[in-house]
Amino acid sequence: MNLSQKVAVVTGASSGLGSAFARQLIQHGSTVYGLARRFDRLQSLQSELGPEFHPIECDVTNESAVNDAFSGLDQLDILINNAGLGRFSPVESQTKMDWDLQIDTNLTGVYLCTRAAVPIMKAQNQRTGFGGHILHIASVAGLVGNAHLSAYNATKFGLRGFSEATMKELRGDGIKVSCICPGSVETEFASVAGSQGAPNPMQPEDIASTVIHVLQAPNNYLISEVVMRPLRPRG
Image (tube, rainbow, N blue to C red):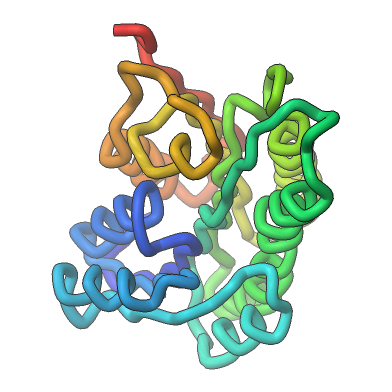
């Protein structure tokens, strides 16, 4: 896909990977609608990126808010389901609130945004012969289970299953679906999750460059899953 004059929605766009995705998409000529709960951070990002970045305050776990965020779009070429979080703890001390928060954000939010995007992309496929590209940002935690990550593992294993199922469902409608599985990345994620993270993590801009590569693949070329890890996570 040539990214010039394309329209993208990026969830969790206020920081970390989301802001890196928005930054590189705009550098390649796309218009980006950035969704996040922290509107002040979205506004700061708009000051940096300019008028091609459109901040939208949206909690992806809220069905009405998601539907409102997508309602004004008659073009949608790219959806990056990036919003996600972790709350790490032993299973016996994992609170129901933290379990629900991870399920609602990492799975239900992806479902709601995907459901809102698909009709727009199907209509584009009817007009142009290509619907668009949906990318789900999962994790290596969707490939292997880890102690104290049971809820987070469950969401990321589930997200990989959702991605594979929707990939098979939507490819006939000219819609690509890709699952991106990074290992440790230098963002706020680890501190929020209650983890120290790897001492030598990957950088958000490098993950974003890989996402751009996946998006720029020819229309009849589908990269359905990508896994990336730091070469020397301990330094």
